[in-house]
Length: 88
Image 1 (cartoon, rainbow, N blue to C red):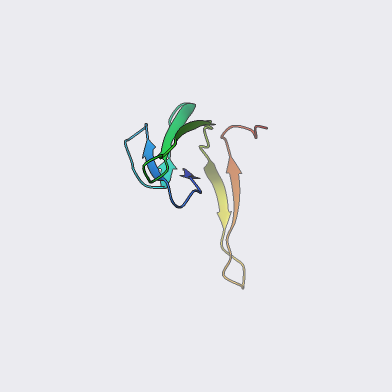
Image 2 (image 1 turned 90 degrees about the horizontal axis):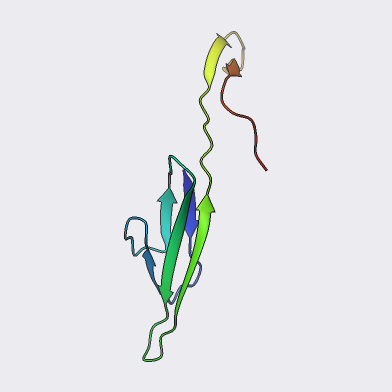
């Protein structure tokens, strides 16, 4: 999941995906998804603006094939495999 936050503290917000009116939403898409935000300034001349951001879905399945718990400091060492590579 990714947290998306609008930073103008005086505006009102409306996120098209899900209809939230909070300044922050949690994006957890299962495909690449555009999140669109409509902001409105307070007052009689309140300006309205829209913006969007694309959140890319990256599959991150991991499997632990071996785990070792034999460390005196209580740590665990794992060998994760699987999943997809990094993206730029």
